[in-house]
Image (cartoon, rainbow, N blue to C red):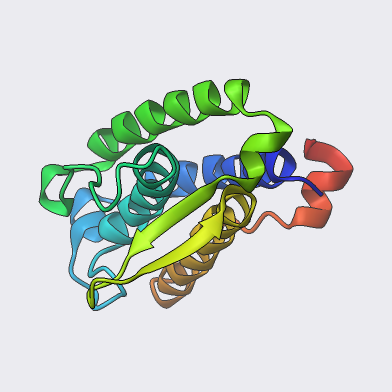
Length: 163
C-alpha cells in the first residue's frame, strides 16, 4: 500500500462518517462530551487540522506556524465541511506535485523544550491517515454510547470494492 492509497481509503471512510455526522443535531455534534477534543465536532475538526498542519505548514518548512483556525470558529457541520474541502483541495494540489525524492524531505515538529523531532515526508504521509482513523474510532465509540450505528468501512472492503 502506498500513501496515495491510504489517503484515498481514509477519505472514503470519512465520506461515510460525514454522512452520519450530518444526521446528528447540532446540539449532539457540538456538545462537550469529554473526548480528546471535547465534542464530536472538535474531534472531527482536529482530524482535518492534523492533515492541514502536517502537510501544509510543517512540510513546507513553516515550522510551528499552523492553521489559524480554532475549534470555536466552527459552529456546525457545514462550517467544518467547508474547511475539509479547502484542505482537500490543498492536499490534492500537493500530491500532484510530489515526486519520489520529496518523500525523503525532512518535516520538523518543534517541541516545547525548544528541540525538534524530525521525520521524513514519507513517515508523515503514513502518520496523518493513521492518526485520523484513530480519532474516527473515538467518534465511533461515542456514537455507540448514543445508540447510533458507526459507519465502519474496513480497509478490506475498500480494497475489494472502493479503490
